[in-house]
Length: 332
Image 1 (cartoon, rainbow, N blue to C red):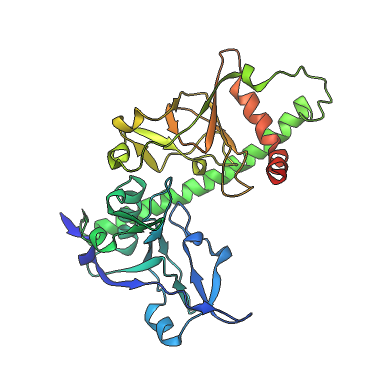
Image 2: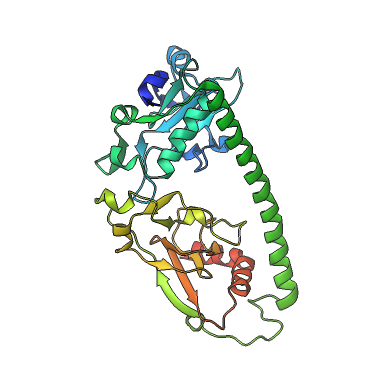
């Protein structure tokens, strides 16, 4: 059974931006900057804005709302991301004018189930066909998007599916924390065994990076041809998939098709990926290994190692030197 998204919501509420608020005043407004790529809202950088009280009452978020990005995006991140508002609060929160609220009809669909449907659709590139680029900004054709059909089952099954996915998310979060602690152990063990790579206090022999293997720069297949990104043929890795706490790359949110792969670049298992271009100092220099064949974008450089090179040694070296890369980035 399928149903149009617009038939599963009771309201489509546009966001508000208002005016600059005086210090200590205003209402909290969620922006796309507060979106994470895992569907969770980051409340650390929520801004305060001066918005008319009537609009606040009309447009304030309630538990179970889905916030969708309708303007923004980038060549590497299609517009249409969604986050789930799952907070019980008496505090007023709104979303900005680059977003809209989709309020699920609880008599027809379980809110978290609808969120997962929309979230998965975006990660698989299904929102690409609803993009409309004007004046340098990528917009989502929201009315067309809401005409799209999604799979629908009984409410009890929806609740069961959503609860299973939520439990899986919790387990993944716990595993990430374990990996982060192991990563810290890896870095400290590396320094203990091999010394400080910069000071080279153990007098290790130095060789040029190019001697480790083939250096490959990533690229982006033409976005104007949506068919390049229309299937799950091969993962397309971005800097978001290179996590500082992980040794290996995470699963890609976007895939290339067979035709898209023809104009892309790939590396095999055991290759090293380094984030060389990023929007923040925190992201520059992050490194991870591949454990499968993938393609990757232009913000990443890769080293496909020679057979006599141990990738785990080099990933330990890079992770122990993150602070140096940040300093180099600041100087440029």
